[in-house]
Amino acid sequence: MNARRQAGFTLLEVIIGATLLSIMMLLLTGSLRISAESWDAGEERMAKASRMFVVLNFLRGHMGGLLPVAGTRKDGEIDFAFKGGPDSLEYVAALPEQVKVGGLYRFRLYVSSAGGHKDLRVAIIPHKVGGEQDSKAEPLDDLPLVEKVEAVKLSYLPLVVQNNNPLGERIAVKWNFEWQEPQLPALVRLEITPENEDPWPALVIAPKIQMLR
Image (cartoon, rainbow, N blue to C red; front, side, top):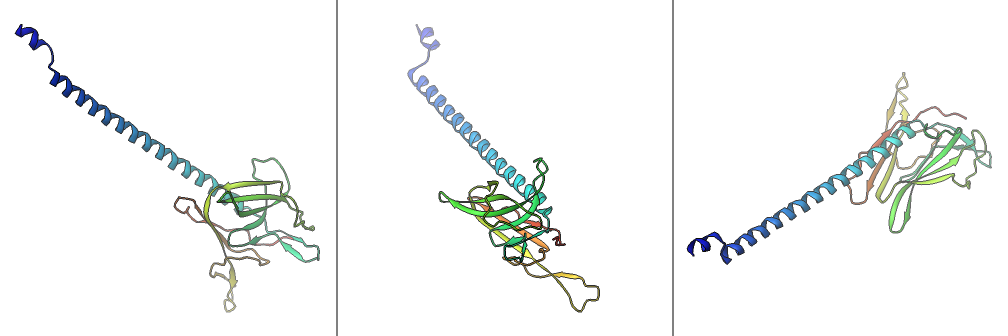
């Protein structure tokens, strides 16, 4: 009789065992949830870093190859292709090499507002070399480059010639937030801050200097 009673479990032992099992299950579930959240956070960070890398590399390569060309306005005055503001920029370049289409195009970077958010977009407009430019021409395409940005800031560094320097060396001066000069700036700096993210590293580009007509 006593041997049969010792071979089983008491109610207290069963309760203690069930309690320990519940605690272990809770700990395991919590660990799995934390691991899943860490995985998702890591994937999100990787996606953000990849987006930043792609956008900045595209802009560095494309804007670095901009062409210092000019057209004419309806009044006969020269219309310089490069025009810069604090949150917009227009320049002339070829399409990326992956797009097998010839000719030159005006690329307009600008910030648009829609749905309570701001996006950095790029509009692509045909450019007539040396001819009259249509200021009201419809873009061939208008694409979001960076969606949901908090701030976009463009600045331009001019070069000046030191009069008392016989070698005519050019010396950089302070950054400007507007550019309407006939010559190109020495450097263009683009700063992008996406929503709910740290600012991206500033992109600094040196365009070509000579103006072609």
